[in-house]
Length: 127
Image (cartoon, rainbow, N blue to C red; front, side, top):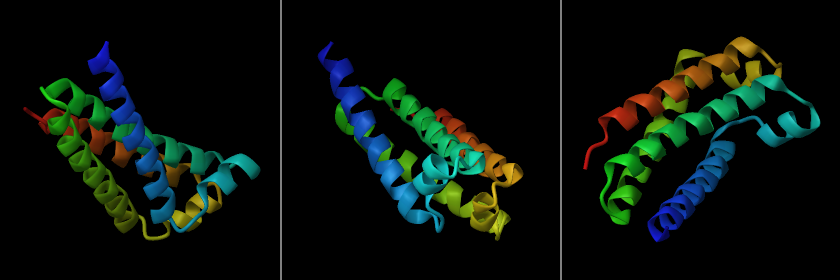
């Protein structure tokens, strides 16, 4: 029970830090777009990125034997997701503007890149 609480708390802290970083990295304002403007593209892109990161964290939890290992792999997962976002923007130079304009295709692109990166990084993690 203690191990569950420790891993869950650490994973939650990583997710909060990831969300803060993601919002800081993107030129557009996710919460303004999601909460006030009901922009589905912003929600899909942001949600897909969080899902991709969570998949990688789940792989880290599953493949580690100690909390310190999990923290190390958590930072790797974090870096992979930041890189995935940068690559998605490289592949779609007008990405932020498209999301602001509620272009679902752009949002699905970011979500797919992020989830794919999460799945691949989770599969590559080993103790």
